[in-house]
Image (cartoon, rainbow, N blue to C red; front, side, top):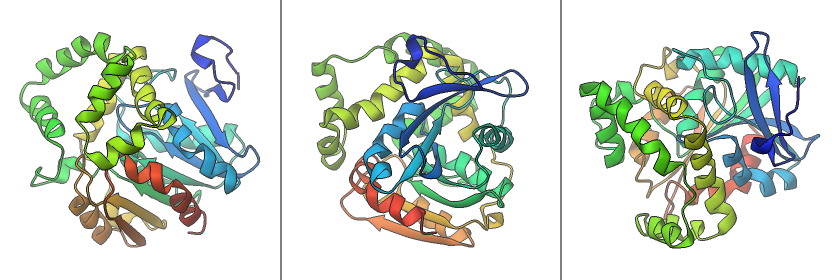
Length: 300
């Protein structure tokens, strides 16, 4: 295992772990260093520092929050042709190197498929899973109306015009990798519903959500694209086969993924408890309720 001190690792809680095949995984840690281990599965497009959202709650609850960049994201090595089921073996090797035998998983938004895959493939190591504002198995949907309009458009382009879709990602990268000035941040918040915009006026919350996105784009459009394509593909396992305890948290005002999609996931999971929160959206749920989410997770 090696630690980098370069510019990309300005925060002293970031390090690089080298796997047996020579690839690297960049990891950030939050919370209590000697606490209960919880692996954070970041959203899309996002990266490891999204887990800053958990830092205060993790410290209170004595949780060690470990947040890796997925392959091709930010400072982790790109893995050509990867599938969702390539993630659990990588995660297992990472946890071996970190000296973790058993651990919990916390997934936000696009991290959900990765947490479900690890729970399915590593039931002896995963003690429990919390999925917050989680992405559903999109390839299985017969009706896409529960997805945000932008996601429906991206899915249509991916399936109908794949070359255009890939080119659009590359063209978007120079713009999405820029840090928006304060007027741009305020404009961005106007596109969100009030419950989400209110919590993101806090600079720390805004940076955790959007700076982690910017850094993902800054590193590589190819990595962000590869991550995106996985959502449109079959997961390779059934939700019904997951026996690890799962806690679902979803805001009833979530516009990225309707809470009706979360209700369908709840019905399919054998060992699941769900919390549907009034007057919260995609961002406001994890920001406002992280203490409750983590406390509930470590009791599962």
